[in-house]
Length: 169
Image 1 (tube, rainbow, N blue to C red):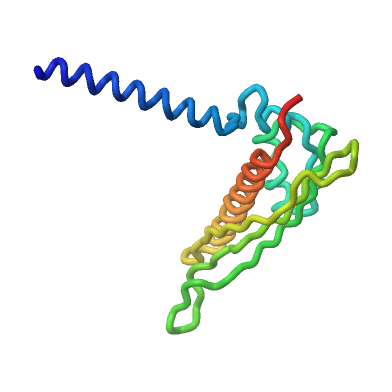
Image 2 (image 1 turned 180 degrees about the vertical axis):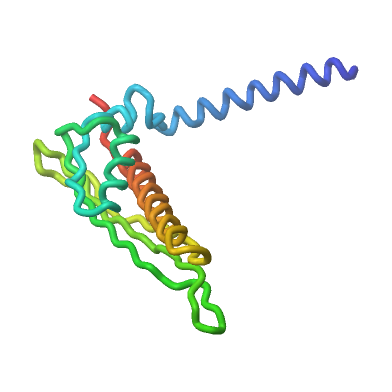
């Protein structure tokens, strides 16, 4: 068998295996989240997050709106953030040079028309910042770490919401 025939045979086999994968995924009921009947379409512009009570809440809510579109009225998203500051790196002189921010977000998505709970859960993540440097640098580092943490938590919540969303109408 020539190398040309071998190359052609490999190309045909690769194409057939790709078709088999696509057909297998389609047969299992998979729907792309941002496809016509996906959860992304069902939630886009339909979720109203609870009003922020802190700067962390504001950053969280802003990221939710960035991912799910402008505020809507079909679903209400209730959430609670909890951020703990934990010393991580302590010198022999007992000076903390690095802090970890451990955060959790508990959430509940409620259908506003029926009052039914669509989904609920909790996600967690962490980040850290250094205290080596000036007071201004430490404060800026903490503020940036809090923003990163709440953004990561919001992204995790959105991922869970999209996975649990009802099909688009």
